[in-house]
Image 1: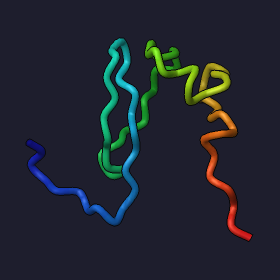
Image 2: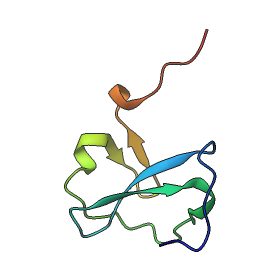
Image 3: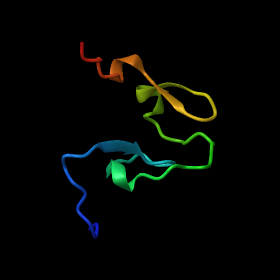
Length: 69
C-alpha cells in the first residue's frame, strides 16, 4: 500500500504498463517524465493512440474530451 494518499480531487491517469497486459491508475503527482524515447510494448496502444512520433503518443480522437463552449 502507498505510504501517502494522493487527493482524489486531483487528476489521476490510467497508465499502460510496459511489456505487460496490465494497466494501473496513478495520481498525477506520482508521475515522472521518462527520458527514454523508445516505444512501449502494450497490447492496448492501438486502442488509445493513433501514432507515436518518437517523442510522444497521439490520442485517438474518440478519446479526446470535447472542449467547453
